[in-house]
Length: 467
Ligand code: SF4
Ligand code: SF4
Image 1 (cartoon, protein in one colour):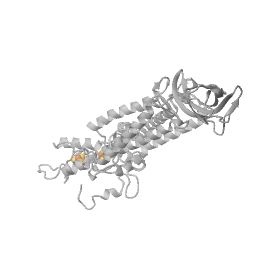
Image 2 (tube, rainbow, N blue to C red; image 1 turned 180 degrees about the vertical axis):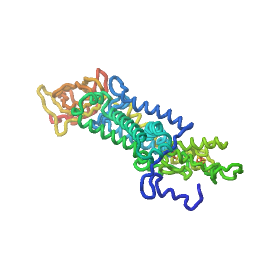
Image 3 (tube, helix red, strand yellow; image 1 turned 90 degrees about the horizontal axis):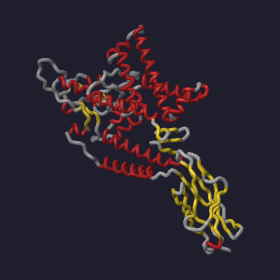
Image 4 (cartoon, protein in one colour; image 1 turned 30 degrees about the horizontal axis):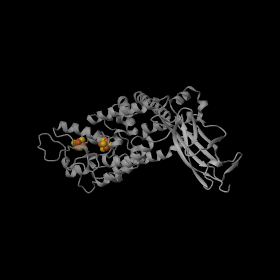
């Protein structure tokens, strides 16, 4: 790092805010290089998944549906409802822990490679901007130029395309919530038939448009909690985009016909010029850095030109740079990994063993036994069954361990898809066939679907011992 007194001054301000508190607009130079190409391919893959998944169906139903409003979730074609809330809680905890673990090891690699904000901004919106307005210098010149036909035309076309793209993105996100079929139905209907949906989609479109057209890197710097958290998640072993100050310093410009005694950094500023958050990676890890790798590519190109080895800016840990030590699996990482494996194991077990039915059976609270004619005795039970499958199901109950009858009070056990059955039934014993001295008789009730037992519920039968 720089050894000047003011070397840490940059930490007192944000690169995109001027001393007067005004926004400093970033015009990053068009990135190119090995990492950028890899990110381009990966982004195309991610965008293909993002826009393709809402159209994927499994057995006639969406492959993925996240209907928060109606609490209707379909994940990998499996239907989940409020009764599966514990799975969501576990899954959510597993995701949080994996993010912590992943960040501790790989830093903000997610931000640079997979975050939708970065993918859309850097790989879609900025690409269009480069195409219409040119590279950073032309963009700056256009912004500073007086309004003329060319400027008006370019800006109008750009913003029109941005708005259309934002509309498509908003519709795609809506498709994840309500499904493509419902989305197409809304699109084909007059707005008055779906006024709230129509207004919501335009609000989301405007939000996306403002974020990708104006707010941009501020979302990562100011709003994103993950970016803020990185300072507590990273340690000196975490992999980050880093400048090799050991090799680069003291930096100095190349002068013609002058033998060079300084470090490898020729102070060309290209790594700063390409940075979409406007920072200088040579100042070390900063919260603004989204690990987009643009500075790695820029510096590699410079190193090629000055015939120095690549990697003056590279993926490495702080320890890797200062001590030249390799990656270490620290106790903190071992603990995180153990917790993560435990959570994933429990989550996978619960997911795999998740039943198609949710069954709750209780002896009706506040009731005793009932004496019936023909020397019979009964108890009443409450039964709630949720059919989580996509098809109608017929269930039946049987007493497994004793000779008794079951009589439903109301509808039989036929459930439509996703229906919740709530009803009562009686278990009837012949007094001659049960132990008269036993107050509580344990019974096992088998729940059958198409002749196959799906669950055995253990409960008690309250007996009349005075007889
Ligand atoms: S691109 Fe490389 S050589 Fe140029 S200023 Fe940045 S670190 Fe130094
Ligand atoms: S410092 Fe480098 S990796 Fe970080 S945001 Fe800027 S260009 Fe991207």
